[in-house]
Image 1 (cartoon, rainbow, N blue to C red):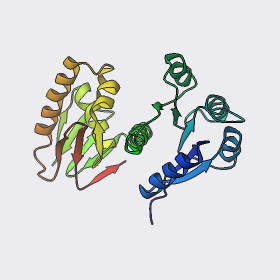
Image 2: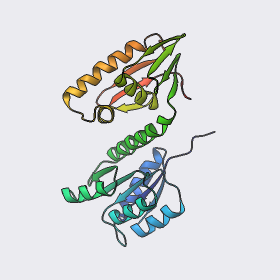
Image 3: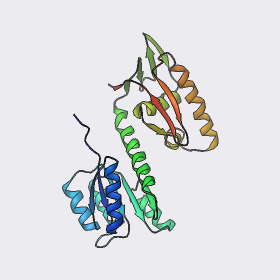
Length: 235
């Protein structure tokens, strides 16, 4: 059974830009519904289920902020990214007050938009898998709630930071865990000292996982880390 595509509602009144973005995201495996204004966007949102919304701010009939407010009134969880030619701080703050997950000022590269979308989706998926707190990672069994890592009948108690970091890695297994996201999730602040602290914990986790040669935590230069494992199962 093939995995169902992520469905994105894209509202952009610039016809050329909208079509370019839709085609680009479709080539990346997303199902994109393009709407030309806020009213059409809200009608589409009312009829369909979307995993992500990308709204231009300056649109006719209903602007992106008004559309986001209407969407948030019926769905407080769906991620929203704003696209805008504006760069005023007040507008950015208004977007985040409405519950925006991210904000991209025009002009921007399509690759940057893709990166932001993927980043948000990983975060959302990470939240969802927190309910499944026991993972099978290769030969290991990791109980995030009890903070234990077991292999061959031997169990080790992890520190809270070790457990939180391994939980994020397991939730994003075989995908990139963004460095800044991990820092802000676990350490709240992504400053230099916290970054060095996370490096120490990554080293500790590598030592804890060394008994299975098929499991590894690798560095992804400029982005973050990836837990490589032949098997990840959530119980």
